Image 1 (tube, one colour):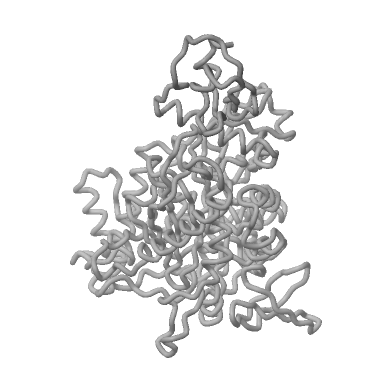
Image 2: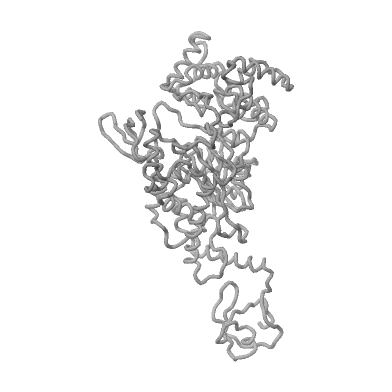
Length: 635
């Protein structure tokens, strides 16, 4: 409320948040009203005086040696204990140790106690000054500031900027930290004044203003950009279960459930289907849902973060990918393509404040921890599923899975009428059906748990509850930008050949790769493990470029889906070990009329009433299916 935003090339002031809609007024008196989800996804949208959140690149954390990662995480636990008294921070719960109780000892005394404790554990050069320096570095740069960078093989984020200028910018950030009305321009002007006071006027060459803007953006803590309030280490453990969620994206639960469905795997076999989803505890909205085979293990939490934190309209190539997916699948859709695009654009997306994750549900790697630390996301272990926790996120997702399985089964029966029993949909087809069903049905379906105590008989839908809570909270949780979608996905190193990039048995190619072919090096490629339609390659300009699947048009050509299904049926028969043909062989030649060909089998009619007709015909009236491989000697 009251902040200025840039929207459609004009500057507006936010005057109200009502029912998920943002009311705006321009400098010339013009007014406007737009959905919050569409406002933050609009091209060119920005908040005046606030820097956008920048997640640290997971691939950069992967370059840190394992010993340095462990050392940084150990420092993180010790610093949190010095600041809050709890090794896990305020979200860890429990009671502080007596020597680190903030109510009894000052911050300096706790730093001295930690230095003596580390010295007793064998840490070298662990004085009180070292503990204080590491704590201050953590406040400025987050977890990345705790990493010993002497052995890193990466480029400097500040480029070739003079170290004296970098130090001045860091000092300016420290002085202005916690002042809500600080702008990036004020940080730059203060840094220039610090350089002039320290080294004299015109003694140090300063880069241009555009370079200084980028430098401030690089050096500022992503969790505390200029203008945000300072972090405070307050709060005690709350007895009686987890705290309630009162704002959108305040607490997001991640859980995995099994679907009563089977899909055709990439090898043509039949695989079971599981769903890992991120459910907003306050509104009941599904911020992310990924289908995957259970035998592949848990889904990476970075994939879920990319799905929930980056709005779909801002993802590279999203309209074309949605149109391609909508063209496949069932002939009768829930909504038309334009209506689906409009509904998906208004689907909630945000960076969560707290993620509640079970260890067996999503894979939490050190790179994911670095991303969460940089974005200010707290991680909490999911409570055990006791009788009292039955109606939690897992139970809600079980209800969702049951309803979607019923919808997918009905669609499959309508499309597979007359075909042999077995798995009909591939995993990408089911994922597209799930995304459409969640957007059109689940988010618009009133739910029992979304009721206000004063209105116990008025159940709201998740989309309605999201809009209501936006007005109550008085703030809109901002998502990440489109370029961060590829950054959050897992990375691999792949070779670039004349035919493109090969990953997972698929080929990806684009014209932007032409000038980089044949260099004999491996490139950083980010990919969605469960969405093969495109990958993201980091080129020498340090940006990720979306590269499409070279054979992606196969989902639109008329006979390709038939080829896939019939190939699956052939592989199923091979795996079952059934003989290629039945009946006796070696009899004299007979006369049979060929009536048709399907799946490599001939539909024949016994022309003379004997011989092949007795052996080949499977139906009444002398018609049947003939296998030329089993009866090759007759031909």
